[in-house]
Image (tube, rainbow, N blue to C red; front, side, top):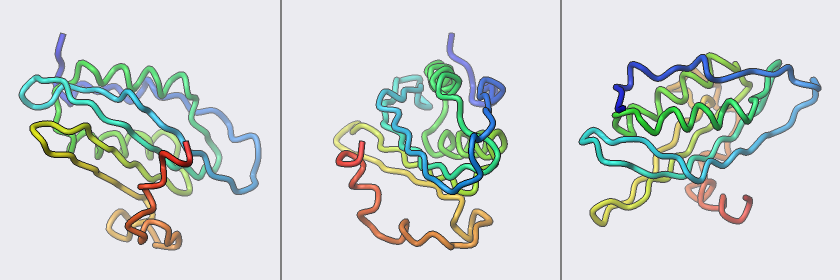
Length: 144
């Protein structure tokens, strides 16, 4: 049964303790990310997460359950990426979080959205400069 975006349940996400205090990067790919667009038609995307943990890491099983939960949600992808970002930031409080959503073409048009906690507009300090490169996200297929 279809639900509105207000019913997205962030409590599905589970945090685990970070096993180290050393700096490292986690890259996660969600290749079968689906949700219902604002007209109730299914939308498909590949989502890429770049995550620099502090005290908590993402339990991947809960992330998978959260992604599956979104399959019945009616929402625009612009709103969805912002909700997804907010939920991950609230649950994990990472040093850095970057989300890139590459939407499958619909009607001959492709879309790619990105949010980075490093952006000043998102309250970041802009200390990581890799997002300045236009090709930084285009290398995902090589990396994953």
